[in-house]
Amino acid sequence: IVAMTEAVIQGFQTGGGFFQGLPAHKVAVGLPACGNAAGGGFVNDVTVKSAIDYIRGNGPKPGIYTLTNTYPYLRGMMTWSINWDAV
Image 1 (cartoon, rainbow, N blue to C red):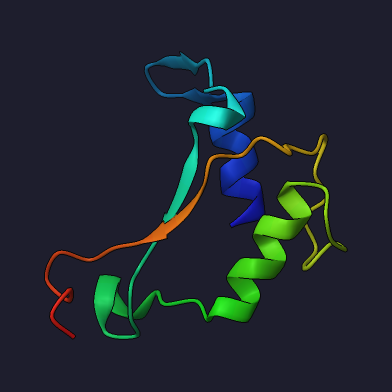
Image 2: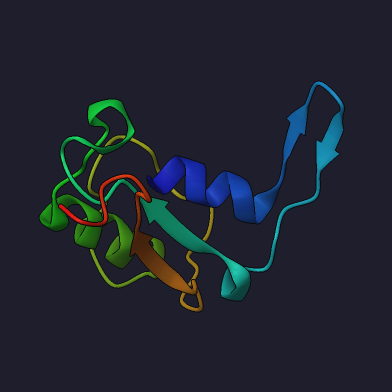
């Protein structure tokens, strides 16, 4: 969560060129809504909160990736899965 969010903000090289990145205030992290969504890629709420807190500069590093910056104005996060909304 942390590394991918920072990549979207900082930018990264792709096969088609460099993706320039987006301002943190325009980035929201989107994650599967339940354990059955997205091929089982569900992450529990404690892990998500730890990652978001760290990205915003409000908590300790939750894993092995170290941010190059903090992003206090990160838009936020959402859970979503159109096929699992009813669950």
